[in-house]
Length: 328
Image 1 (cartoon, rainbow, N blue to C red):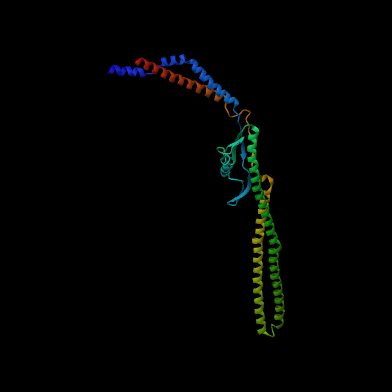
Image 2 (cartoon, helix red, strand yellow):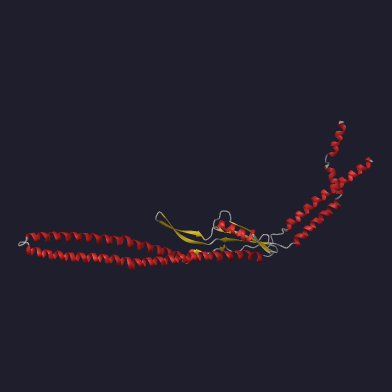
């Protein structure tokens, strides 16, 4: 029983020398099959339409703003579009929607944000020529520049409108608010001047009747005292009006003027940058697909493995047939 089992085990063991003999014996088949598959791979590599890949680094447009923190004013840069949302939107428009469209000679392969970047996006496109692939990216850039240019134009127009509103407010302060204060101050000053004249008249009358009519003199002195009180109140009102005019209106005008200067500085062209390509669109002199060397190597290896596997199967079938005949 044990001898039979050992014989079966030896029969099932792989004899490397025997395998090598099979390969040598069937080398013509291996050579022919390997050659056929390799030649097929070569024909594919050299007849397949070459695909060229181009890529471009895009800087998302931006504009300058002034931020105030703890009375410190800093000029910062704001992106005209959120890069993350922009990439998602572009992927939907130029990849997801168009991926099932047939007979396209050029496609957008990827639109991503480069690692470690916040205001740049990278677009890759492929086509049967560098020219067509570049046109695909150029169309995207044109569309972005048109949309972002409109946004920047609206921002600039809003700032110009804000300047006009400030100028109107300054004009109202100069031509309306200031004159009202000045008119009121003059009215108060005129009232003081009239009260002073009345006091002079009272003093003259007091001198004349001081000895002859003491009772009337007392009444006139009381009236004089009341007039002096009124003058003091008016002086106080004039002081408060001038303080209010200087502290309120003048301060308001200074703030508006400063704000106007800031906005005017932000309107300058260098504070607006539309979306643009960084450098140039990068092209390749050689097609990226098919990779001829890789296709040929893979074809050769695949052909070699398949042909060896095939001759082993054929040899296995042949041995089984012989054993079957022997048994019979």
